[in-house]
Each structure stands twice: as C-alpha cells, then as structure tokens.
Image (cartoon, rainbow, N blue to C red; front, side, top):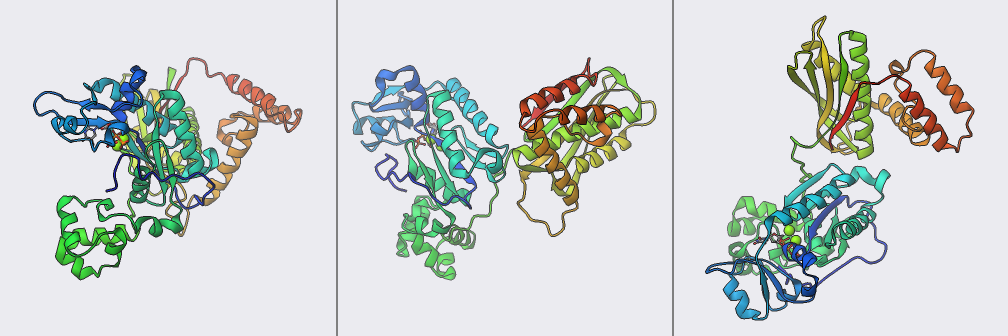
Length: 446
Ligand code: TTP
Ligand code: MG
Ligand code: MG
C-alpha cells in the first residue's frame, strides 16, 4: 500500500474518542534492524539492512533510512545494494530476535490474556475487559509503548480501532514509533481514501483486476455493486472485500487456546482423604481462578479439574459450559461435578488444580439470560472489599472457620476505614494463621 518509509506517517496526538475501539495492533519498528542497533548504537541514523549477502540473499529488514532509497523487506540483496550502495548489511541473529519477541509478548500479556501473536514482532490485543484496571484503549496503548521502550530500548507502533483489520492498517500508518486511534465513528472516513492494496487479501493480481474495473481506493470498492465485483475477483473474495471496505470485520482476537488459560493448583504436604476438606480446597481454588478472571476482564468457557493421586497418577477432566463465566460458584459446581466423576470414597489426593480455558473478553456476547447474575454481583462486591482490605478479608463462607470470622470482623472494626494497608496486614496474618504450612500453591497460565 502506501510507502512504508514513514513519509506518510499519521499519528494521534490529542484526545480522541476511544470508547468503542478495544482492538490494538502492536508491531515493532524495523524489528531485526532495531535489535541489532541496540548493540551497535553508532549505526543509528544510517541505512542498515539485515539479510543474506550470499548469491540470492534477500533483505529481511531495512532501517527507515534505507527505505528512503526504495529498499524493502523480501527484496533481493543485490537490488537493495544497487539502490542504496552505502547500506550497512548485517547478518541476522535469530536467537536474539526471538528473545526480544518473547519479552514484548510478555508485556502484552500482562495487560490482557487476549493476545493473538501474528508474527515474531506483532500481535493483536483485545483490551475490552482491561478498562477498569488499566484505563481506556488509547491509555493502554500509550502505556505499552512506554513499557516496551523502557524495558527493551525498542520502539513499536500501535493502531487502536474497533476491528482487527482497521487496527492493523492504523499501526502501519503510524510507523515508525507512533500511535493512531481510529474512532469507531471515523472508520469509513479513515479507510475510504486508502489505495485498494490496503485491503487484506489484495495482492498484485487482485490489485490489477480492481484497477481494470477503475477501482483505485477502498471507498471505490465499498461503492461497487456486488455482482460486478464478483465477476472480477470471484464471489468469496468479493464479499470479503466489500465487508472490509465497509469497515465490517467480525473476527475476534484469537488466543492459542491450549496455552491461554487461568489456573491454580495446590500440592498437599499430606495426601487428603476427607471429602469435606477436598471440596473446601476445590472451592478455594475456584475462587482464586474466578478472582483472576475478573481482574483480567475475561470469562472462560471450559473448566478443567486436575487431580494427582497419592500414587502420582494424574488425571484431568474438562467440562464446557453453555455460557462462559468468571463466577467462582459456577466454576466450583463444574469442578465439583468432575470430581464426583473421578473420585470414589477413600481416594488419596496429593494435588488438586482448577483451570479456566477458552477465554474471551467478559461482557461481550450479552446473553439474554445470565444464569450467574446473582453470584456475579455478590462476587464483584467481594472483589471491591478485597481491593480495600486485602485478600482474606472476605472469602466464601465455607472457607471461613467458625470463630475466625468473628475475630476478623472485630479486627476490621477496630481499624479506621481508610487504613487499607493495616487491614491488609491483618488479613494476611489471618490467612497465615489458617495453618497452611506444608502447602505449595502455584499459579499457572495467564
Ligand atoms: P515487519 O513487521 O513486516 O517489518 P519490520 O518490523 O522490519 O518493519 P516495520 O517497521 O515496517 O514493521 O517484519 C518483522 C520482522 O520480520 C522484520 O524485522 C524481519 C522479519 N521479516 C523477514 O525476515 N522477511 C520478510 O519478508 C519480512 C516482511 C519480515
Ligand atoms: Mg515490524
Ligand atoms: Mg510485523
């Protein structure tokens, strides 16, 4: 599409309406070259290429300075050096690119578990559920750029939009080192002047077909009657292009399901045999998982129970819900049913794990009837008390031993309401006093 040398850069500088733009596309700037420049700062500002020099070597990455000479990724190195004879060519060091890639992906995952990596240097993020904790989408994008810069020394560009497609186009317009928010109401005004090559799925051949029809811009495609477009590029592509050109892109940010989960597990110092005690642990784990789901602004569709028996045999059972949830009570019910299927009387349990999978942003698909509504309300209220007084101040009733509850209420009453820190100490102490010695609790997933 437009020249990728930063000459048509478009960035957001002032306040904008980001209320309906939860999708971020983050892409590192001149990634391989930028990593090399961390070690060779004297090359900053110069035309630098990473790629193969032998025979048919191609350019992997080009600095923005080199791009002004018409050099781009995937171009034969021989052509690149004709266009830019002064270019400094470095051989790649894939291991270090991969390390930096992991480091930036980790930063994204600390904002939301809804991260879809697209390649080594870019990802989509859905921050719908992150607003309460991290701010608006534009604020989140700003913070991510700051963190990436301060923790890696690299720059990235971010597009913020209502859909994946528009976010991706926006990040490329913002390059290098910029952020572009496309308010939902301005989506068409942003898309329509772009050249047809900006449409996803339009390569050289399709571009030529569209040009023959007299279509130059995305706006031209949006206005083209469906049958004429279908004759030119076939029905499947035609309908996709029409939708994209009209700003319609219903694809969700997709995480790699198997590794995207939120879970907790606990290994006991002594095998558990008492069913009441086992269920109490299950409830506690379900509560931990639900709290983390709500904090991350996501709901899970599958609940997985993991058990390790005294003889180290390990089994898992997963149950898929009709509606995804972030409610401890629902997670506990499912885990508990799975437990019933697995465990007979007298089983010796060494480890219990509970995990939610198939995560997606909460509050998305507004069900007509929410079976968990009451529980959710109650548990959110607990989240708020927890935020003020610390974890342990309020727990599901079955977790609180008789006597302990009274002592805790008394200790909270004696403290002024604004002394959240002091109360947290008290709560932590109470938790420690629950006698959980010999227990190894771990978090996993995220
Ligand atoms: P890109 O994000 O496409 O490009 P970039 O990061 O170099 O520059 P930009 O600022 O425009 O995003 O690709 C990321 C890295 O992937 C790139 O630095 C090198 C590698 N890559 C190749 O090895 N071959 C290729 O053909 C392309 C396009 C990229
Ligand atoms: Mg890049
Ligand atoms: Mg990229």
